Length: 70
Image 1: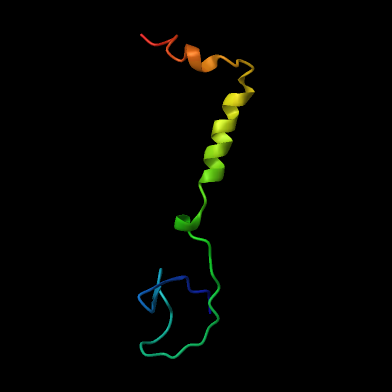
Image 2 (image 1 turned 180 degrees about the vertical axis):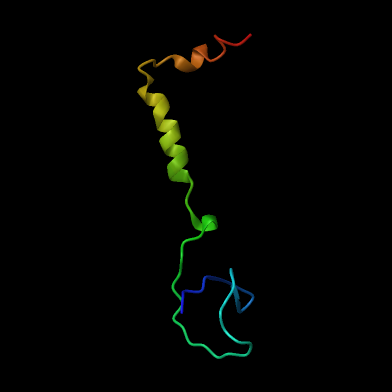
């Protein structure tokens, strides 16, 4: 039998896909917490992007941000 991925909400496990079990089947399992998109810390990605500005070798780059604007 393949793994069943589910969301736990309001006291009930809600499968995210089809489950190959008959209705009213009793099952036993040990929940394993899986990292979901809502739990991902995006701050690390933001800091990575922001750190790239320090590698421009132009300490006054912000003062010229409109230089190429029409």
